[in-house]
Structure formats: structure tokens, C-alpha cells
Image 1 (cartoon, rainbow, N blue to C red):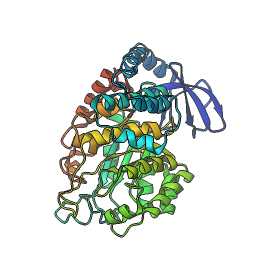
Image 2 (image 1 turned 90 degrees about the vertical axis):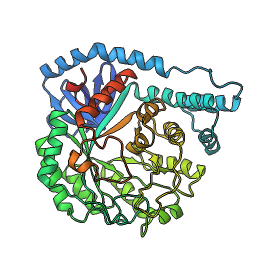
Image 3 (image 1 turned 30 degrees about the horizontal axis):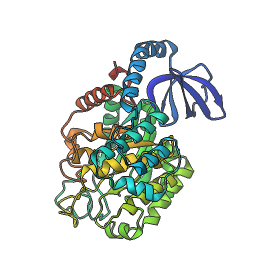
Length: 436
């Protein structure tokens, strides 16, 4: 669990540290040679990233302790389950009882939940997912920053606005100094402890250049770096891991090979899956998932997508709606209702490993303005805030009119903290200075 609140190291066994947060014990991989039991640390995404001076840590923890308990009480009131809404639907009750007990559900059970229509039954289903979220993760919620460093892409995906199909898009590529400046603002000013660096598959950056950028960021800041540069090859993944990257955001989009070929011109699903599998072996934290609502996709496909994300050892499940860009071959294709995305997120909580996080994507927020709150009440516990410089943000046009395109980082952070507090969640990864 990644906390921007400092925790106290209780024990260290080889490279695994047990860290205490107000009585909650969390594991984290330790790469700091000087770490000993009794030290205070920041941990992100399952990694110890920084030691904290005891005086500073105790001051922060004293300020947070009362609020932490209050937020837990708010969260406990919200997630509490009841039979209200189940009616006489014994099948639904039995499925949800099994899920809440941590038992594996059959594919037909999951498909039944995905196709629920009655509002009261759907509400109970979503509450059950939120119950499991609280059971496994208490009231913690991760909020990472993402910097989109380039909108150049050599791929011809049939729905994506930065693909080769969009000839009218103004392209940009941030310089190393611009990237360092954006990271500095996110980390030093706004308190982010985890940053995703993302781009299209841009041949304008060599692997060596990306590695040097990552090394320089790690020299300047104690921050968890996750990458999302597309298929850069296994050797590329190894080099960037060696430079300090520790997470990979790479969605497979669909588990259906035929559907993948139709929507990803000249690409094969197995190649992408090989990248993800090898990244996990290298040591990357995996963020992966799919698109919901692709033309020709079935309920069975969505269920298979969820199981594939689990098979790929996803640290975080990322499932969002299919939103085709108007300057691509799939322009005008039908888009699913937000209710379908919400039910997919809830199913992800049932399918995922207990420790996995569930992300509310920006695409879902674009489709449904209240997606953050709805998603967090349906089993999700992770958000990504866009910290790309405003002069470039709208140009990363993977789909039109993205949520938060014109919002400053400061406004995004304040809105998220306000929402999380209203739901009784601890706003992790945003930095303690923003939480008081």
C-alpha cells in the first residue's frame, strides 16, 4: 500500500520491510542500504522510496492521527452492507455472499452481475465491491501524477487520437529540461510521490535518452517512477528498470486476439502480452487492463479481460470506456453507458488479487463527470491526476475533450482531497502538506 504519510519500519527481512501506519502493517520492497528497524519512511507502490527524519515524521503523524481515525469512521459507515435492495433475488444474494467471503466466482456468475439491469440490484452489487475494497485496503486511496511527455506515435490504432490516422494533430515532444521542470513542480510543489511518464510509441526518444532522463529524475527526487511508452522491447524494459523505473503502465486493451488485430493495425496481442509478462519478471509493478465497449466486444470478452489482468499479476487494474477519436477509422462508433464501466470496475474488485488496486480512469471521468465518486464507491481505490504542462495537455488528444484538460494541478489536487475526505479515504500519494 502506498502512503504519502510516513510509516515506521518494524522489521526488515532480506529486502522486505514491514511498515506500521497507525496500526496497519504494510509490506514494501526496500532498496535503501542504510535502512534499519525504527526508521521512518515514505513508501510508494510497494517500494520504500525515502527515509524521513524522526522529528519531521512524528510531527506529521501527530497532525494526521486524529484525522486518520475520523476518516476511517466515515468510510466504515459508507461501505457497510445490508440486504436492502436484494429483494427476493436469492441468486444475487448467493453470488454476493460468496464474493464477500473471498470465494472465487464462476464466469457465469460474473457475467450475470455484469448484465444486471435493476437499479436496486446494481446498487447492492456495487456496495459489495466497495465492501471488499475496504476489507482488503481499509480507507487508503492512491493518487498518482501522470506527465505526457510526447504525443508522437508510430502506431495506427483505429480509435486513438494520437495514432498515425490523425494527420491534423499538432505534435509535441518535451525536452529533458521540460520534463525535469514538470516533475519538480509535481513533486516539490504539489507533493506527489509517484509519477507516470507517458508517451505514444515515439521513435524520437532513444532508450538511452529515456534512461538518462529517468536517472536524472531519481538523482533529483525521491519519487516512484512508472513508465508508459508502448512496446519498447524487452531489452528496453531492462535498461529503463536499471535506470530506476519501477512500474509499467501497459494495457492490453482486449484479450480477444481477433478483436485486437482489428483495432491495432499490424500488431499482435501476444507481442504485447510478452512485454507485460517479461516486465513482471524483471521486477516492474504492472498496471494493465482493457477497453470496455470495443465494437464487437461481448460480455464474455470483458470477463476474460479481467481474468487476463489478474493472470498478468496486475498491481493495478485499469479498465476504461472505448472513446473513439473523430479523426480515426472508428469515429462515430457507439459508446457504452457509464453504468457498464462502473459494473466492470466492481467486477474487477471481485476478480483481482486482494492486494490489487482498481483505477478510475480519466476516460471514465470524461464519459461520466461523477465517475471518480461513483468508481470509488464501487470498489476502486486509485486515481491519476494529469500534471502535464497546460500548454501540452490538450494536444495529448487520445480522445476528445478529456476531463481536466484545462485544470491547474492545484485545482485537481484540492478537488481530489475534498472528495476523498468526504468518502472517508486517506488521500495518499498527494503529499502530507496537501492533506491538512
